[in-house]
Image 1 (cartoon, one colour):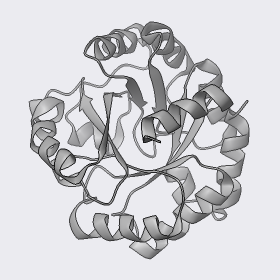
Image 2 (tube, one colour):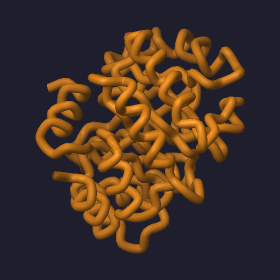
Image 3 (cartoon, rainbow, N blue to C red):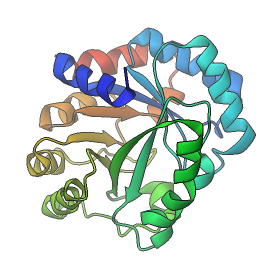
Image 4 (cartoon, rainbow, N blue to C red):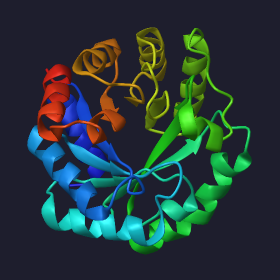
Length: 247
């Protein structure tokens, strides 16, 4: 089964997907694998691998190699640029940062990475990536014109443009470690706008209540990263998130 089909089937069955984001540059590969294993035990549906800086090359490959030996859920690349492609992943969120001022993050990195995706046989999942205030490191690195938290109609317009471009997934990102998640009003507006598309929400989702609120507002997939990496008991933390967002 293809990874996109796998995720879509979970949305149909459970109402929402849980994705655990692990930045291979934030810890040693062995620790990243421990986090991934605990997340799978807690019920996460897939592991996203990537980061804004440093998640490339040998550390990325080794992390994925070790993960593939010890977990049984898909691994999905979440690259910061064309260097964030690895032959050891199952799929890649092939994304364009639509609200970037820098063309490199809209299409140039994608053009440089596309031949590698094809060569390695990684499944590409087309996605519009939208960064919402405060944006964090990814907003700065990607030179994003941050979507104002009080303007859900702007996020909806960008998301609709993404679906018209043919992107089947829309990702609303508040930035890793953000104090607050994307506002529920914005989540609802975007979900209403994209109709049949799938909506991912991440950044600032620190507890199960925030995750549940985003899912209730219309998110099809919830991403948690910093809250998981910082958790003392990763398995329990993931289990809380999963229980909160599933039907």
